[in-house]
Length: 334
Image (cartoon, rainbow, N blue to C red; front, side):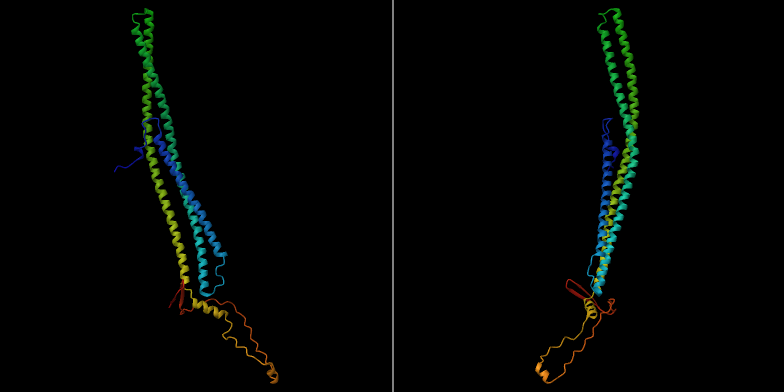
């Protein structure tokens, strides 16, 4: 299959027309605009990621979340909040990465613009020179054709009046005919010279047009390739961020697997217990019997006031079973 090239498909039968060239330039301008739109998209996405990351960090640091929990569940909650903070930091790092990619896109876009400008200036000058010479040539052609008509009219006048005018009038007619022939020769020579000059300019323009088409096609291939790769890289960065976040969430899940309901209950009991004996029944005492027996009333024994010590550090013995629960389903690991 034959390769499709710019140089083969952007011509016009009108020598002064720039419709093919203009079509390419318009396409390149649209491509540059598309790169700018993607660049702005990355910048706005970076703002969103940074804002989201900061809000996650503030949430993990300032919002209470099970702050009175004890022992293994407390450790899981601490891991949860720490990893949420890490996720927020990850989004802030992603925002910085997106800004860097946007800057690369901007640099690429401006570099292409600078290189393209040189070709555009050359083509503008050639188009101007070509159109000017074409205009001169068309004027020379118009003058040449007018001189041809003048010469024909002079010849016809001589033939028509050959036997109808005086000798002096004939001399005037022949003089006019000679003048028109001389003017015709001058205009013909000028017309041919204009055609020669125009052809040289046309050949030069055609060569430069081909070179410009090849340059613009190369640029467009580079732009499409760069844009495609930038988009591919952006999606990979988003995927990588998701993977990294899932790794952080996996750490939370591992911490929850170490959470033991039995240990937390035991830890709370040992920490906050108040006694193992329930109060005895209150017996009925007859007032009169008590006076008759003169039994001295004994004061109740004072109960020592226990003072709560500092909160011990939650620990789990290496031989203790690990308990996990998910949606009411419990599993003990030995």
